[in-house]
Image 1 (cartoon, rainbow, N blue to C red):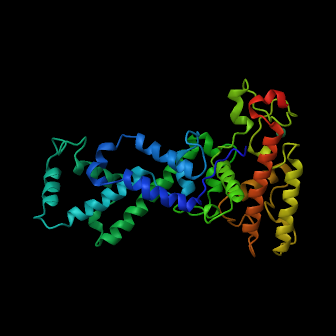
Image 2 (spheres, rainbow, N blue to C red):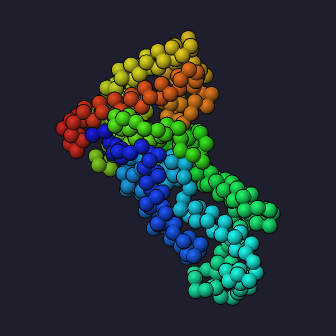
Image 3 (cartoon, rainbow, N blue to C red):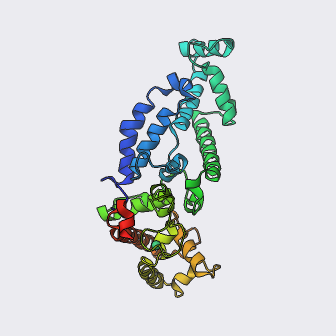
Length: 350
Ligand SMILES: [Zn+2]
């Protein structure tokens, strides 16, 4: 009823299992075949489905694959293949000239008329476009180590650019709040809130948090297709025609979860008091006076990876506030579910 399906393992362990049993097979012997699957999206979307499951998001959920990968701090299979190929290029170029691989490579470089050895594209042509794509030059490096570092830097840089470009186009990344704004720690690693072990209840809360970050929680604004385009809140229906969005459910815009939000804000005050911030939650989002906008801003600040100077962090206040916030999310969602009772017959419940 929580709308979440957490796996029984921590996110980190789930990713280890993924890397061992899925990615190792999907990427086996990459340099031999990578150029033949440039246009193939099947493998990538299967990988995306697996990553979604690690995060407790349903396989077919319409969330952005860019956001899903960023949420785990991983690259796409395509990018991982590019890295392997670029490293392999260095190895071949530095083999002795009598080695068969080197001879074959030199032949491919000269063989511009055909596709090389029966592949879709000539590997040498493919690699020169790859160097161009990442703006890399192996001749500018003196060791495999510095070459590898340059490859990773270039691939992550492009990955970041792609993520930013994706948000502009994809509604599940910018509505009603920005994914990039809440994904505010290093994007090359899993965000801190997903690290470590947690009890089953805490896992549920963390998974719900992830779903909110990926815009995959089934609030009214997303369920209109089921109810003749009626996107209003199934619990209150007070405002005629108003859409139920994430803010409505979780920051007390719905009269039926208002008390929970008040309790949460009280606890947040308490946490900040105990950490030495006398003004309590007034320390957060100081510049915003309008109460509704303030609550929305605080919601987004707590949904982010790290305090980032937007949340007063001292003596563990961020970690405690974050844990209390995740519990609040779960409480609101559970309350909403029990109010609707049977989500399939919404009309009867209202
Ligand atoms: Zn409502």
